[in-house]
Image (cartoon, rainbow, N blue to C red; front, side, top):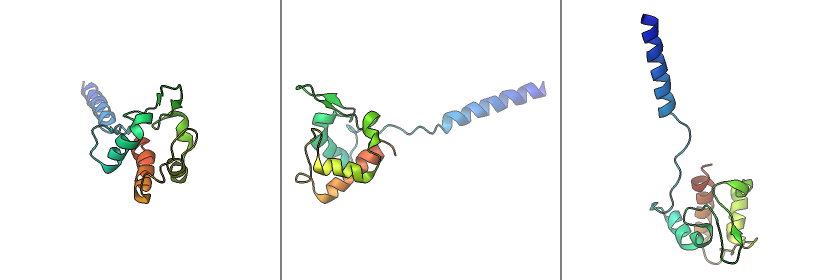
Length: 118
């Protein structure tokens, strides 16, 4: 009987441990974030990438990529993300003349770390 109780306690503690220490990070929510980067995203990027950066199809049929998952994750370095934001390309507007150097760096970090959780 003692072994059964001990087993029940062990199973309970194991289940509790798994529930408490789940390694999956919480998803960053842009629309409720008060950060400066989220504000820039809402003003400059959400019109094409969508309010939560999940991509969308524009009225002219062009598909704007999801910044959180999928094909765009192949752009694995900060430098590649910075280049895409600053120089544009593949249908994206270049933001070098719109955002300051500091803002370009902030947005690079925002996309790589906050949206992708890397």
